[in-house]
Amino acid sequence: MNADIEFLTIFAEIHLGLTAFFAIVATLRQTLGEALTPYQYLVTRYFLETGLLTTAVTITALGVAATQQDDLLAWRTLAWMLTTGSIVFQFSYLGRRRKLQPPPPSSKTAIIVMGGTFLVWLNLLLVLLGINPMPIATAAVALLVTTLAGSIAVFLIFVGSFMMIHEVESSD
Image (cartoon, rainbow, N blue to C red; front, side):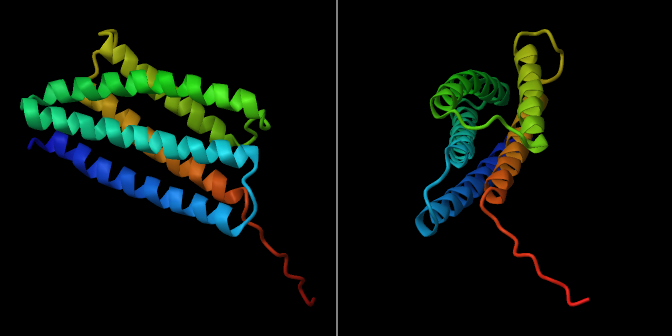
């Protein structure tokens, strides 16, 4: 197995593990606490769906590499699946968001995640269309790592939406 394809194996394992952890925390939050707010529901669905979609696409690319013995074909498959999957997911997410009408993202982190992910995804699309000469593997890895970092950031926003701090009065 080529070293660059090995990255996909490691990435898929880490991403699936994090997605499972996020799912457990979200499930425990709802089971032990009150019902999720519309905002928490959207955030939960975001990190679970993007996590599972990204993991499935990565495993598919590994399958292509294993069966076809062609790393470039595997990277192209990954890139096209990430691109089409992102488009389909965004329409689905925006439809769900419109129905629930949560408050607009007020967190700088959420805005940075959305903007950064869009720019890296756009770069991948330009590479696929031959407009940007960057190697496909480099552009795909950039999107995978951005997606992973974005999922972690969104998860932290989710956790922050229900964490409370009790103020301690000083005795001064």
